[in-house]
Length: 174
Image (tube, rainbow, N blue to C red; front, side, top):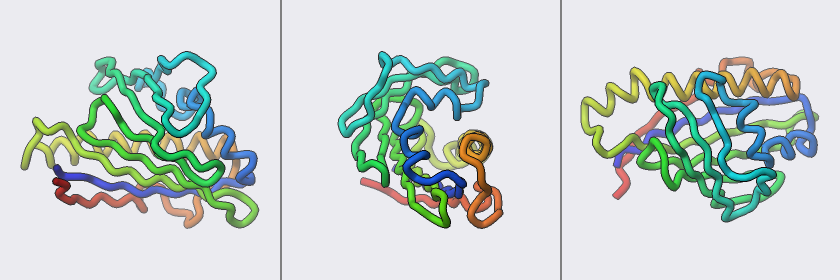
């Protein structure tokens, strides 16, 4: 399986104890997801974030409603949590969210590892990744970056756009 990786970071002006509670509420995903994705949380609210929590929602992929189920496999407030796809549009999805106190604010870090559906192989997979998946993820995380700056103030730690620091690598996982 070819796994792509993307790493992003952003500094926000609010302290960690004011930022992490926002991320501990899955209901807030609707606020940080581009409206055209039609994000809808299906898990009954309120959703208590904890290790082992399953979260169901729908998003639009290529305009079609798609169910997505994730599992919180790690939850260490206020430092990090991990969501992993159980069912959804990817063959594999692992998203590590890290939070670090820095310069009176908070450094938000995202590490994504994902694989496209197994039906896509070789050049077709690379084409779909380059023309659709990677740009879509960069747009989603760019939207989130703008929303976080509005919610929590601040600018990026390096001043460069998040997508400029994103990296995609590939590896085979047996």
